[in-house]
Amino acid sequence: MYLRSDQNGSLHASFLWMCIMSFCKFIQQK
Image 1 (tube, rainbow, N blue to C red):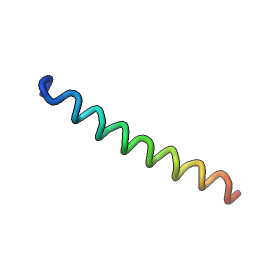
Image 2: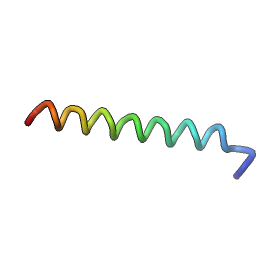
Image 3: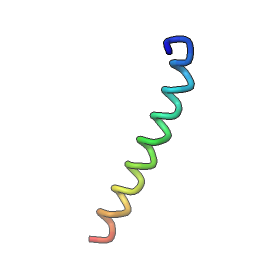
């Protein structure tokens, strides 16, 4: 798992970015 830490990190970063964008859109709708 440590050898693929870069790939996992990028996947988690992308997923986290998607969550942040969705949260921002949710706030703007309020």
